[in-house]
Image (cartoon, rainbow, N blue to C red):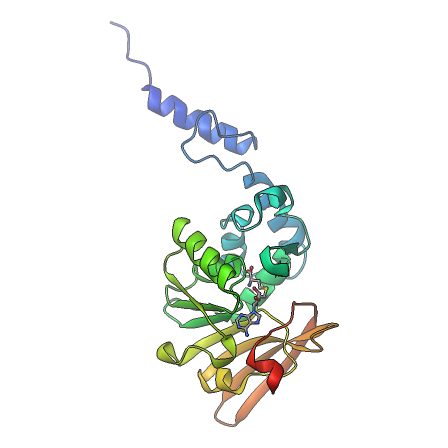
Length: 246
Ligand code: SAH
């Protein structure tokens, strides 16, 4: 009697693994093809690990979230390049390194409450949602807020709550937050955001000239006052809304 061969499903699964390890297209064999998997791993190695991104969880998440799904379809082939990209309404999705760095600096622990100001494409929010299921994001441009909310929902990041509004005022209903990340340039820290930060909480903001460059600044709220760390030079699109009236 001849032995039965391996079932077809096992053969297909094996072909999937081989195709993946050779960085070949999965399309023919696998259920969820990801033509950018290899480009994403290269990005992690060359742009993040090769610099100062060392937090294993940040590296893992950056290697997991499909950045190509957050840019315009025509720019998908550039999604893993070492620079920011334009999104709708004249705004930008930050360079992958800056997203990774800001995430590493905030060091979000599971269960912590995090608020992002400037949802944009929703990419940074998707990255944050891998660290905690308590994530909120505010976007001042209505069409961006709507499309990011829809995109996050469709891609399975429905645990991030997105609201259309001015992030200057924070989101008092869910305050206080353990961490607040502002992803638009500001010439001062919106006072209500400091109020909505927990004692011991961290706030990260590109602070400086909104027309030239800013210094990525980390502020930790302590009983003795705010600890301020000036980290590195960055360029973000300006925060708009009420902040411009101050
Ligand atoms: N984090 C985004 C990129 C941010 S670009 C991403 O991952 O794609 C900066 C965003 O901040 C823009 O979408 C801009 O519309 C938004 N923004 C500017 N001022 C704002 C404000 N006062 N409140 C909320 N969002 C604001």
